[in-house]
Length: 387
Image 1 (cartoon, helix red, strand yellow):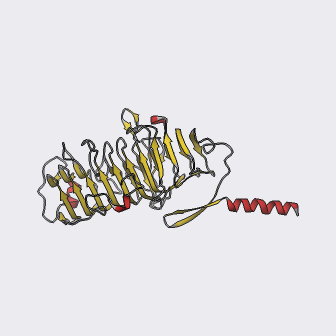
Image 2 (cartoon, one colour):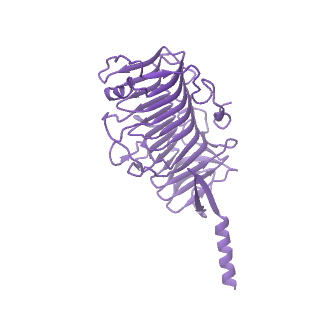
Image 3 (cartoon, rainbow, N blue to C red):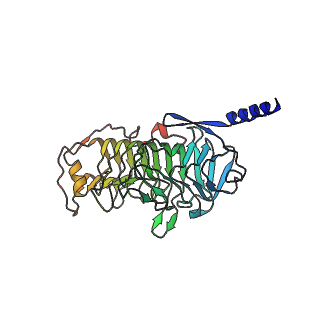
C-alpha cells in the first residue's frame, strides 16, 4: 500500500508539473523538468545550455541578467512566460541561440510582453536572438549561421522551433567580428509551424529582423530605430509578412524599411525568395539615398496594401530577373506614396534605368498599410513600447 501510495504522489506531481503551450494552433504537452543545476537557478547569472530532454521554465516574477550565451540544444526547450524580463549585461558575449531541434517558447501578452533588453540604452549593446531551423534554403542543402556557426536549413517546411509572441527586443545587434554583426532577431531556415507574431525590434544595431530562407510566416512586426534595415530577407524565403510597421531613426540614419534578395551569389538560385507581403507601413526620412522597399538580386514577391512615407524612393527594384517579375505584372497593388520623391524605380543588373510599364503597380490614396496609414497601428500600442 505504501509503495502504491508513493506512486500516486509521484504521478500527481508529474501531472501538476505539466505545461500546456499553444503554438500555431496546436497544443504541446510538456512535462516540466526539475533543474537541479543549470541556467534556471541563478537569475543574476543567466547563461548556459538547455540540453536534450530538458525543459527550463523561467520565473516571470524575476528579472534575469543575461551574462553570457544561452544555447537551446537539439531536443531542449526554453519556456519564457509572459512578463519575464531578460537584461543583457555582457555585450557581444550575451545572446540567445536556438539550435535545430531546439525550441523556445517566449509567449507574452499584450499587457505583459516578454522583454529582452540591455543594462544600458545603447544600440548594439548585446547580441540578440538567433534561431536555426530545418526548412529549405537556397545556399546549399544546409548552411552555417554567420553567428554561432550553427547548422540550419534542410527539407522540413513545417519545422517548428517554438513561438515568439508579444516579445520586445531592444538595443541588440552587437558587433560579433569586424565583418559580422548581430541583428535584433535572426531567423535561419525557420519552418512555418514556428510562430513569430507580435514581435517588436527597437533601437538595434544592424537589422531589426532578418530572415535567411525558410518558410516562416510573420505577423504584427514592429521594427523602429534600427541602424540598418528594419526588415530584411534572403536565401530563398517563402512565407508571408502581414501587418508590418517600421520607422527609420529620427536622425535619418538607417537604410530601408524592407530589403529583399534571392541569393547574393546567384540571382536564380532555388528555391527562390518569393514572400507575400501585405498590410505594411514603412516610415522613413528623405535625407540621403533611402528606399522604403528595395527588392533585388533575383527575389520575387507579391505586395498589397502598402504605405511608404518620407523616402527618396518609395519602391526600388533592381536586377534583370526581379525587374522582369514586376514590370507590368500588377504584383504591387494598393500603394499610398506620401512625401516620396520617386515612387518606383527599376534598374537592370547592369545598373541601367528600365522604363516602367504603367501596370507595374496600382495606387490607393486611402491605403491603410499596417492598419492606421502613417500612424501607429492600434495592434502595436503598449506591448511594443509605442504609445
